[in-house]
Amino acid sequence: SFSDQLWKLFNISPKNFTFQVTENCNLKCTYCYQINKSCHAMDFETAKLYCDMILNGTAPYILDDNGEYPKGAIFEFIGGEPLLQVDLISQICDYLITEMIKQNHPWLFRFRFSISTNGTLYFTPKVQDFIKKFAPWLSLNITLDGNKALHDSCRLFEDGSGSYDIVKKAVDYHRQYWDAGMGTKLTIAPENVEFLYDAVVNFIEMG
Image (cartoon, rainbow, N blue to C red; front, side):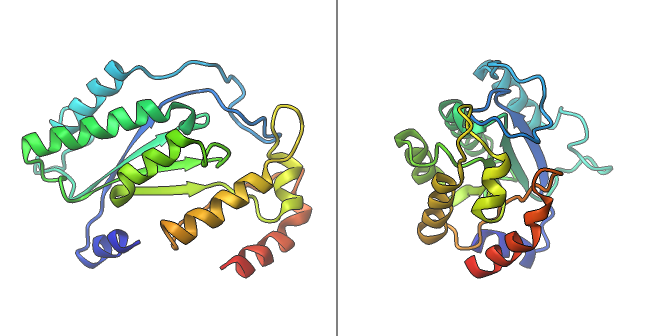
């Protein structure tokens, strides 16, 4: 994105801060490493405490040896499937921006929000409202495991049906209307490694 290019131009190396907003997920991927999923979700008071520690420099490993802040910050939201908690994420983002404005924080014009999502909730009204609200600061990566054969061999809904069609639609829409340089994440596992060549070709053809 244009923002990412500016960061490279001014040699800004941002520090990454991760919020695991939920352990829950609406997919049942065969290769998932999170074997102890639950419906547990972060509450806003916990998130707010973490935000305050980050912004005031009291969280571990934030300040450098000279007691200075990194030149930029990436606030990352993960799950489970993070967009199951899109209301909480929106609340956290609002709080971070408001506090940075109040404090005239050095990150005020040097921050990003980052989300990696399975894409299945992309077209829900709440998620679309969130994307529109935070688009100038948002990096959204939608996981797509190559082509349909590879993706649907592992990335399944609880009823066993594949999720490729809805995820591909989300990827195409987001690349067209929001971020032509968006990324994705391809997971290779014993169940799908035979599709790797076709998956790479498919990504190249998609651009």
